[in-house]
Length: 329
Ligand code: XMP
Image 1: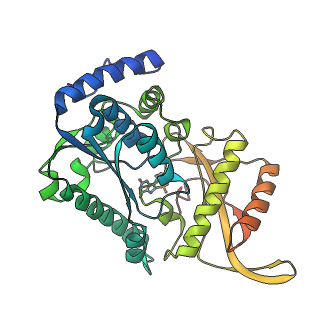
Image 2: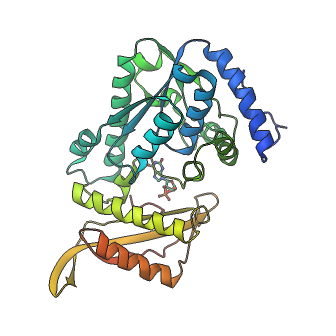
Image 3: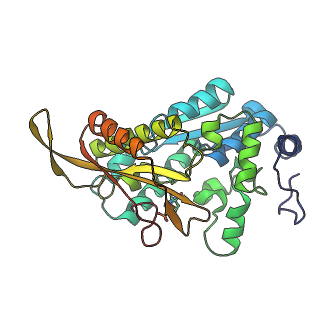
């Protein structure tokens, strides 16, 4: 059985050997805890839930039921990658729920950032709870809680919800399974690498729960959201090509809700700008800006203005935190 707390003298997992030893130990502990019962997991495709899924697939195989909810605010290719890695390669029992329309309908016309977050959070719980209710014989709920979540929760910085804020009729049914809860983020990545997860998943940059929704400031419309998604995909592709992936802490695009005049093929355009933000940090409280090479910026401007419908201008955000936050909402 895994420790409930990180032992004070626990050696930091810094080598593949230590990661393998952790994996072996966890597989035994998970098999002991779960026995022949079923386990449910909300699999976002983020590092923590992906590592939990990969561990449980090794430990209990098809007894694990993963639910991947697409809220319509994921990055380009994300749901496809989750399906490819977990269902096709790892042979996981994966339920894919495309709830995009449901989320976007609820968000239509909502401009307040906190209300947007609230709707996305509530709707996510509703969709997941609906799936959970369809499965009557599941006794365990797996979560990607990590050690900093527990420390932050104890320090009163961030609420760490047991059972992810699920309604009581669902939450009370489950015993929690939290196999990476004594690990720091870098250790989770090390374990994920040893479990054979792709680098793009293991070393991926932080991505907020409300997803692209906070990068489409104001009321989300489908066309502007697509402009965010397409420009983000171009930015990520160019970061990979230029060896910047994994070196810059977080990078993304934002498409604000205003238009400016431009010209294309001799005709006037009236379209959105696309803002590029690339930042570095150690603790997220203070953030510095990554100064991208001029040639890369020129290339990004060209690609984004020609390939992304609705964009006629590219701006670079050079503001550190403070005074700005990382996200726009
Ligand atoms: P801010 O904008 O607060 O962002 O400077 C700091 C870090 O937190 C991420 N972030 C979020 N993550 N839900 C999340 O899971 C959220 O609502 C949220 N808001 C910001 C942001 O991407 C950055 O890494």
